[in-house]
Length: 231
Image: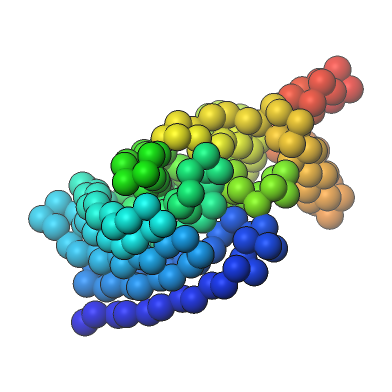
């Protein structure tokens, strides 16, 4: 069975500074046609002997592009593909997709397809992420998305998995490189928002102040903002 869909976005997406321009879920044997400002994309997902692959082809202002990425030893679960503005140094939006590895509390394997120079496309592999792929957020309201993940070293380190909390980590994509911007001015503002979220949780669940998993993340965040002594 083949699934075909088309999403149309006009120039308002750029004017409203929304980093995610389109998204679609795909299973093996399905395809999608997406159209956004600056890109026409056809994505086809198919099974392989050891996992699955995704074939991407389309057109940008710089001409046609085509590439295929294969995942090995992953599940055949549905996956979501995003077209988003992640790198302002080029003229085309980026394509992000991921596969699920399977296993308890694990793991999304994210990949970004990016045009680093006119006509030159590369796959950028992100580290595996627990449970979900990176969130795409515009933390500084400039229309370009950042990738927000969680520091996975906190899981199990101070409490059970279910009772673990984790500080966020923030990255920007620039010419095929992922750059940590967690402690920049805009990154610190987003850290402050996470502290507020955690403290809001604790207002409704006061027992969290006795949870090592919660306190570890809260203290780490406060320390990142220079408030470790207070914590």
